[in-house]
Amino acid sequence: MFDDSRPIFQQLAERIEADILRGVYAEDEQVPSTNELAGFMRINPATAGKALNLLVDRGVIFKRRGIGMFVSPGARALIATERQEGFREHFVAPLLAEADTLGLTTQDVIRLIEKESEK
Image 1 (cartoon, rainbow, N blue to C red):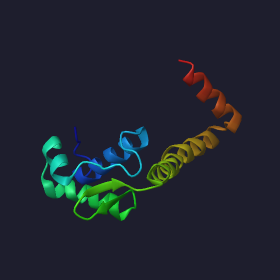
Image 2 (cartoon, one colour; image 1 turned 180 degrees about the vertical axis):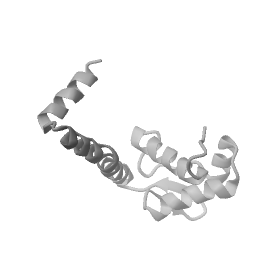
Image 3 (cartoon, rainbow, N blue to C red; image 1 turned 90 degrees about the horizontal axis):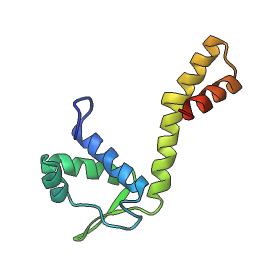
Image 4 (tube, rainbow, N blue to C red; image 1 turned 45 degrees about the horizontal axis):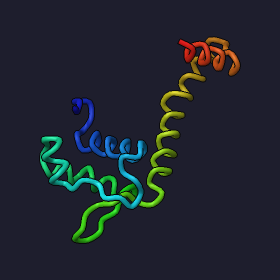
C-alpha cells in the first residue's frame, strides 16, 4: 500500500491526485473525508488530514465549511501540468543528456523509443 521511501501523507496526496487524473473524482466532486481515508487506509487521521491539507495548499482541493473537501475547478489540468514538468525534469532531461554523451541524435532516441514501444 505505502512504501518507506517517503512520508505517508505525501504518498496519499499523490494517490488522490492520481485518482483525480484518472477521473475517479471529477472537478467539484467531494473527496473522502479525513476519517474515511484514515479508516480505509488504516492510517492515523492526522496523517490523512495532512495529505488533504497539502492538496488544499496546492489548490487541488478546497474546503466547503461543514460539508467536506471537493476537487477544485482546473485541478486535473494543474496536476497534469505539474506531472508533465516532473516527467521532463526527471526522465526526459537525463535521457537526452545520456544520449548526448553516447553521441545519439534526437532522431536516434525517437527510433529507440519507437522500437521499445513495439515490444
